[in-house]
Length: 313
Image (cartoon, rainbow, N blue to C red; front, side):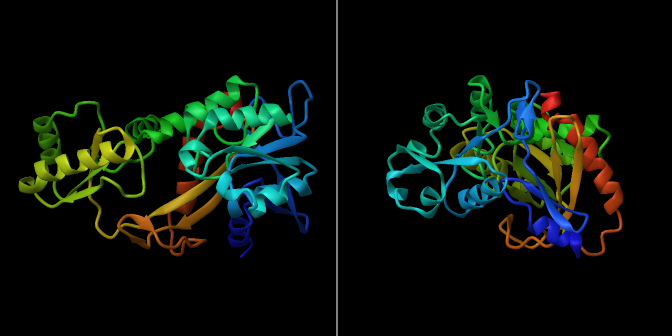
């Protein structure tokens, strides 16, 4: 029961651990200047929250409990939004379209510099998984509260991430995730894997570009369709092939690390109930998961391999 509550109480501004009869919070930073203080002893006194709505409000509530001042950013459409009123300061960053405001990394970094914020918390969505934005923050001397740019970049490329998993000794679904993208070559690889197979874009998410192929006669048409959708959605048309597993369980494990190289897992969640490869509900803890302890060990090994902690950036 406590582990289930723990996962529900992970705030975007920090993590709560049940310890000695109370919840204890710790802010996670992946940059050289962590929320608890950098090697030079500089503590984080003010963060800019690069998001809006419920996401930003939760971060601000946690920051307030930790005694950290907050800066909100907003588009013209969100001028009177709750997250703007919840922050200590607020900066306009552009017109309503997200690409001209919440996705404008340069404007957000400028807002941080203008207000004296020492760190940027991206929340989730928008720029939270942008390696370029994380790198920009680091280049400007700002703490990016999240994984380092190198980890975001590696894990954003499914082919690269599979290679990392393989090097860590993690079992992989049989498939092909190399650089060769010639149609005839891929068709031969599909034959080696054995049908049914799953065609999956190397970048992006949300189920876009994924195709289940039942036999060789469907392969070329499915491949071309997957490449077109991937190019339109993510700007990259490279794909990988996997053996399609019927009725799988989709289990995820959250991880948490600090700048000292400490990593812990936050147990598992079952995301198997999906529609069109999109999760409908996430449930924790996952029931009847016999290999959970082995899964946790693999997760921690993976985390070290992708250098998710700042000390390895």
